[in-house]
Amino acid sequence: MSDISIIGAGYVGLTTGACLASIGHHVTCIDNDARKVSMLELGEIPIFEPGLQDIVKSGLSSGRLVFTENLKAGVKSSEFVFLCLPTPEQPDGSADTSYVEAVVRDLGPLLKSGSVVIYKSTMPIRSHSLIRKLLNRDDIGIASNPEFLREGSAVSDFLTPDRVLIGSDDAHVGERVASIYSSFEAPIVITDAKSAETIKYLSNAYLALKISFVNESARFCDAVDSNLKDVLYGLSLDPRIGSQFLSPGPGWGGSCFPKDTKALLHTASDHGFDFNLIRHAVISNDIHQEEIAASVIRLLTANQRHQGAVVTALGLAFKAGTDDTRRSPALTILRHLQDHVKEIRCYDPFADLNDDPSFTRLTTPLEALKGADIAVVLTEWDEFAQLNPADIKNSMRGNVILDTRYILDKEMYRSHGLVVVSVGIPRNS
Ligand code: UGA
Image (cartoon, rainbow, N blue to C red):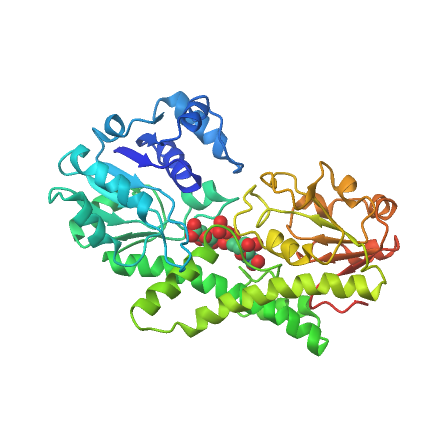
């Protein structure tokens, strides 16, 4: 078993550290946020991620998982050092690698000879040579090992991946990194660094493109009066299309797809390449969110409730299973609506508004629905599907719910005098 350190205890770093400890490695997680480190040392995790707290606690009690703020002490004896740092979007769409660059500069003199620096952060294609230059050490290996975990199912995605991807310009380093995952059944793909970085970007771009296709198809079904539900079922039975990532919604968001598609477009344009398909997937996603907001206004107008309207948003997180609102379609749609209505009341079981005063966040769904002219389901939380329509009817002033996540039972709602509308689904179906 290997001596591993992880730099950055965010979604990816904390999951990577706790999971690697759970399969027997000795892991030191390093983070420069002292408060976060103290919390983690007590087994408290700062994010909502199913199953993560349990493996952090068992890692701590086995002694195989430790946390520190001290970079020097943390990496001193490590054979493998994982970089799990943010690479946020810059105004021009490129990925900001300054956090990674600063840490790599500091790491240079601290690493044990023969150790390997592995970057899990999604890094622009060609980062391998940048890291080599900044480290300024020939006795250290470098590898890219992009992560494919999703927020909300991070632990199981990490422990039972579809594939493990390793990129290094030194084949022996690639093999050494592969040994970390020797207990996994998944195929291990070892390639050069640029190809690994490209696989990561194209994976996210392809999935974003697929969801844009589904969301545009939903609006197309409305235009031609087809039933999206049957259409998607029919499509999904073709194994070349498949049923995964075929759920329509309010648009794709989160900390990865929006940022990574933009960074891919930026890299493409730097190389004189116009990645038309992905450019249009991004445009399609923006238009879809505007169209959802426009549907809310149309529904309010059709029901003579536009003037001074109160809108209730059920869900703020970018998807269910997480408290993350980064680039959440829910917030984008609410911002599009903001100037057209009197009040926006919100409820989400985990996500909050981070003191954004534009909207009112309530503590229960029924409170949020009080006096609403229209409600919009924006995140697919199970608890929204379990709500009692009779209670909703009593709380709301209007009777229309726009369900962008297709989770409400239309028939049951109809029997309580409520109309549930979803893009692509005929009203009377
Ligand atoms: C995504 C990828 O799925 C992971 O493989 C990758 O590791 C991660 O980005 C990353 O690069 O770090 P994540 O952003 O956590 O993971 O979330 P997803 O589950 O992929 O969802 C992204 C967005 O697409 C969400 O807004 C979600 O609601 C939407 N979505 C997803 C749909 O609208 N329909 C679907 O069928 C699936």
